[in-house]
Image (spheres, rainbow, N blue to C red):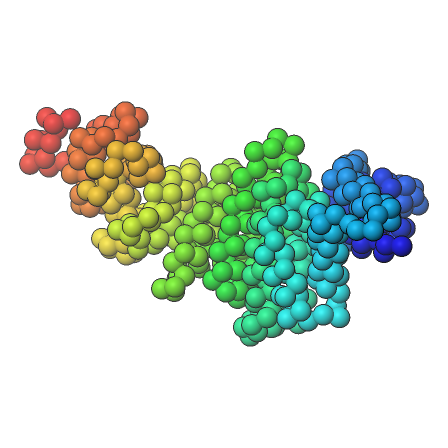
Length: 436
């Protein structure tokens, strides 16, 4: 008689699934067992103890039921023949292997070294991705990464190799599974304060690889195209975008990358872009110093190949709808002189000679338009901003931009900005006007 793979056993009844259904936490139970649990007055997930949504939804896990049916058929075939099909043996071995890996990951009896070896088995078998997702690996991995106990945090901070390697592999698996999901309700656990605190610690003390993948996780959460899950993801992005500790760590990644961590700064820029796409996050981003971080990034990387300076400029444009963001841009200008300040950084982004021959580089052209739009916003209300823009070479930049292959909307904004600056032009600048 074949032993039942652990993944096919209901966590409540401890028997083979008959009618598997998945809750909002991502965990799967037999329908009759979870119904009895709920009928007894319980409003939490039996395994994670996470509070369930109201009304409680139970989604039939057709993939798991199909796998169980296949497994049962394989058992019948094996009993009725003297030899088993190689494919059936392979499927059984895969299921048994995943059950073994999950046991190692869940058990406190195994240390980080054993868990690393278990995760390496998963990452080396990409063909099992959908199986991992349907069998509840996503919530397990999220809990393992963001449910770090204090002792594990100490190991992480002390740069214990296997602890760091474990988190790196677990995050890689999470990012591997995320695009395959539809609802992904298990991400809701990241709203818990304890999980958010772990997120902050990992950003602060993790390796460059961990920090990059945490930023990619933020980006992935915001990228939902499914209307059924977009509202949940939006709420999660708003929670992340209002968490002071997480935002501070993103700013630090942008401001102070090591030579080997410029990729982490780029990942942070993409994460901030994702968070800034939600209006509810704008003020908290500004309040936590994001404008200064973005200006510093632009100044540092504008000449670098494949820089995300155009994206950083687009984020600044979004943030300038808040008055305090405009003030921060101007304060940066008055405190830091003529190099590396907000106005000068934006002026540099209006036009770069290296972009002129790249007609199909939409990203750079969007950066130009965002720079012009941002300068329109700040110069419209500030004489100081207009003076600094002119001293930074704004007139030449605008005229060069208008002669380039930029979009008609960018040229229209450039003309508007030229007219706005006209009152500050000297008599020697009148020749430029005739060129408009």
